[in-house]
Amino acid sequence: MMSNDNERTLGWFVPAGTMRFSQAVLDIAADFHAAASKARPGEDWIVMFDWSDSRRFRVKGSNDWQDLGAGLDLAVYRRDQVPDWAIETGHAVALGCKIRPDAVERANDKLIDVDPDDPSRLMLV
Image (cartoon, rainbow, N blue to C red):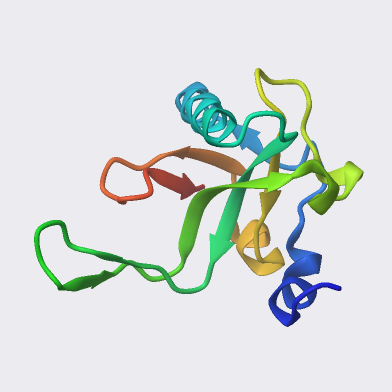
Protein backbone atom coordinates (compact mmCIF):
# COMPACT_ATOMS: atom_id res chain seq x y z
CA MET A 1 0.00 0.00 0.00
CA MET A 2 1.32 3.43 -0.98
CA SER A 3 1.65 6.13 1.63
CA ASN A 4 -0.42 9.29 1.24
CA ASP A 5 2.70 11.21 0.22
CA ASN A 6 3.44 8.71 -2.56
CA GLU A 7 -0.16 8.89 -3.74
CA ARG A 8 0.00 12.69 -3.77
CA THR A 9 3.21 12.76 -5.80
CA LEU A 10 2.56 9.82 -8.16
CA GLY A 11 1.72 12.30 -10.93
CA TRP A 12 5.10 13.93 -10.47
CA PHE A 13 6.97 11.16 -12.35
CA VAL A 14 8.26 12.71 -15.58
CA PRO A 15 8.17 10.65 -18.79
CA ALA A 16 11.62 9.52 -19.95
CA GLY A 17 13.00 11.80 -22.64
CA THR A 18 11.33 14.94 -21.28
CA MET A 19 14.32 16.25 -19.36
CA ARG A 20 17.93 16.75 -20.39
CA PHE A 21 20.95 16.33 -18.10
CA SER A 22 24.31 18.08 -18.13
CA GLN A 23 27.40 15.88 -18.08
CA ALA A 24 28.27 17.22 -14.63
CA VAL A 25 24.88 16.07 -13.30
CA LEU A 26 25.29 12.66 -14.93
CA ASP A 27 28.65 12.32 -13.16
CA ILE A 28 27.04 13.22 -9.81
CA ALA A 29 24.27 10.68 -10.47
CA ALA A 30 26.81 7.93 -11.25
CA ASP A 31 28.70 8.65 -8.01
CA PHE A 32 25.44 8.67 -6.04
CA HIS A 33 24.43 5.32 -7.58
CA ALA A 34 27.82 3.83 -6.67
CA ALA A 35 27.41 4.96 -3.05
CA ALA A 36 23.86 3.55 -2.84
CA SER A 37 24.98 0.27 -4.40
CA LYS A 38 27.83 -0.01 -1.92
CA ALA A 39 25.46 0.60 1.00
CA ARG A 40 22.85 -1.87 -0.25
CA PRO A 41 24.41 -4.24 -2.80
CA GLY A 42 22.07 -6.19 -5.02
CA GLU A 43 19.30 -3.57 -5.17
CA ASP A 44 18.24 -2.41 -8.63
CA TRP A 45 18.50 1.32 -7.92
CA ILE A 46 17.14 4.13 -10.08
CA VAL A 47 18.77 7.50 -9.37
CA MET A 48 15.97 10.04 -9.11
CA PHE A 49 16.04 13.80 -9.41
CA ASP A 50 13.41 14.35 -6.77
CA TRP A 51 11.48 17.60 -6.30
CA SER A 52 10.64 18.87 -2.83
CA ASP A 53 8.40 21.84 -2.09
CA SER A 54 10.36 22.52 1.08
CA ARG A 55 13.94 21.61 1.93
CA ARG A 56 16.19 22.39 4.86
CA PHE A 57 19.46 21.18 6.27
CA ARG A 58 21.34 21.48 9.51
CA VAL A 59 24.30 23.84 9.36
CA LYS A 60 27.48 21.88 10.01
CA GLY A 61 28.78 22.29 13.54
CA SER A 62 25.60 23.82 14.93
CA ASN A 63 21.99 23.13 15.77
CA ASP A 64 20.83 25.76 13.29
CA TRP A 65 18.75 24.90 10.25
CA GLN A 66 18.92 26.60 6.87
CA ASP A 67 15.77 26.76 4.77
CA LEU A 68 16.46 26.06 1.10
CA GLY A 69 12.93 26.39 -0.24
CA ALA A 70 11.71 24.29 -3.15
CA GLY A 71 14.12 22.46 -5.43
CA LEU A 72 15.76 19.24 -6.54
CA ASP A 73 17.58 16.63 -4.52
CA LEU A 74 19.04 13.25 -5.40
CA ALA A 75 17.38 10.08 -4.20
CA VAL A 76 17.44 6.42 -5.09
CA TYR A 77 14.30 4.40 -5.65
CA ARG A 78 14.01 0.66 -6.17
CA ARG A 79 13.13 -0.08 -9.81
CA ASP A 80 9.74 -1.46 -8.73
CA GLN A 81 8.88 1.97 -7.26
CA VAL A 82 9.26 3.80 -10.59
CA PRO A 83 6.95 3.41 -13.58
CA ASP A 84 8.78 1.91 -16.58
CA TRP A 85 7.81 4.91 -18.75
CA ALA A 86 9.69 7.23 -16.34
CA ILE A 87 13.07 5.43 -16.42
CA GLU A 88 15.90 6.88 -18.55
CA THR A 89 18.22 4.07 -19.63
CA GLY A 90 20.61 5.74 -22.09
CA HIS A 91 23.14 6.81 -19.45
CA ALA A 92 25.80 5.14 -17.27
CA VAL A 93 23.09 4.54 -14.63
CA ALA A 94 19.31 4.37 -14.86
CA LEU A 95 17.75 7.75 -14.05
CA GLY A 96 14.35 9.21 -13.44
CA CYS A 97 12.72 12.46 -12.43
CA LYS A 98 9.93 13.07 -9.97
CA ILE A 99 9.15 16.77 -10.31
CA ARG A 100 5.99 18.83 -9.83
CA PRO A 101 4.33 19.23 -13.25
CA ASP A 102 4.17 23.04 -12.90
CA ALA A 103 7.94 23.15 -12.19
CA VAL A 104 8.63 21.08 -15.33
CA GLU A 105 6.38 23.41 -17.33
CA ARG A 106 8.24 26.52 -16.06
CA ALA A 107 11.66 25.05 -16.94
CA ASN A 108 12.32 26.58 -20.36
CA ASP A 109 15.27 24.35 -21.25
CA LYS A 110 14.03 21.18 -19.46
CA LEU A 111 17.62 20.80 -18.24
CA ILE A 112 18.92 19.57 -14.91
CA ASP A 113 22.32 21.11 -14.27
CA VAL A 114 24.74 21.88 -11.46
CA ASP A 115 24.12 24.85 -9.17
CA PRO A 116 27.25 25.51 -7.11
CA ASP A 117 25.29 27.81 -4.78
CA ASP A 118 22.70 25.18 -3.73
CA PRO A 119 23.74 22.60 -1.13
CA SER A 120 22.02 19.90 -3.23
CA ARG A 121 24.17 21.09 -6.18
CA LEU A 122 21.21 20.76 -8.55
CA MET A 123 19.04 23.17 -10.51
CA LEU A 124 16.23 22.93 -13.02
CA VAL A 125 16.48 25.31 -15.98
